[in-house]
Length: 52
Image (cartoon, rainbow, N blue to C red; front, side, top):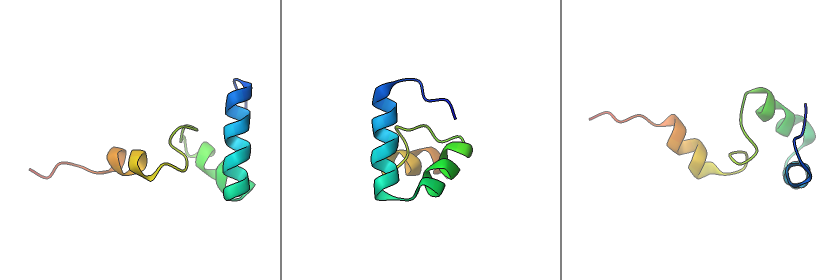
């Protein structure tokens, strides 16, 4: 995985300390961006559909 900048490295390290390295890497491999990892509101808003 290529990390673009130091800020992203710090975010990933914080996420790994709250979860596991394997879990964070899995999320990245699934295509999640760092801003969405650990943010349930962004995940819900992208996966819900309008049924009306």
